[in-house]
Length: 111
Length: 131
Image (tube, rainbow over all chains, first blue to last red):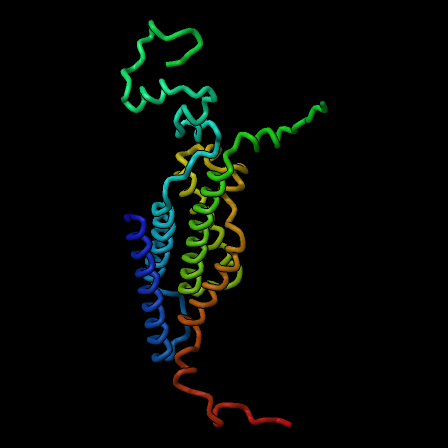
């Protein structure tokens, strides 16, 4: 949302700078003066528009995702990766059964 | 049973999760494309020519890399395969987009479009036809 606002601002600034430049050049042409350099404020507006546009383009992209398998596995539930299907683990996570008591779990079973 | 040997590059590739790599590549390409377009527009508006225009493109690419570095939370290795070049490169064929928008804005702002609109092609304006 904020990124989109920045991009729109940058587009408006670029178009305004373009129009200002065109007006300035027409003004010079009407006076018969040769083309010099542009006024400093138009140059500043154009460069600020560029910076704001790039920042807005970065801000509006959604969060990048980590590329390792490990980070993806953090997002997934344990049942998907644990090959030992156990209704007890699922039922505890679903709240159907009370949570496991560490003293009563058997050897080798993670609670 | 034959044993297969994997190189370190293949080992590294096996540790990566391809859908996320693709997702990140797609998002960063969008950012680079937008920055190329803005750089082209500004280069055209300012009337930059020759190497000055490409210098602005290089500057815009560096600024984009800095913004993407911040987006990666200063750990680009976690989000981009391919190291620093992945961060810094301007994107596939984005230089052509830059030149396209540059010539577009240069032609509109600094060109003689107004003159052409005011002086349409009449026989008085065109050179005489030669056999």
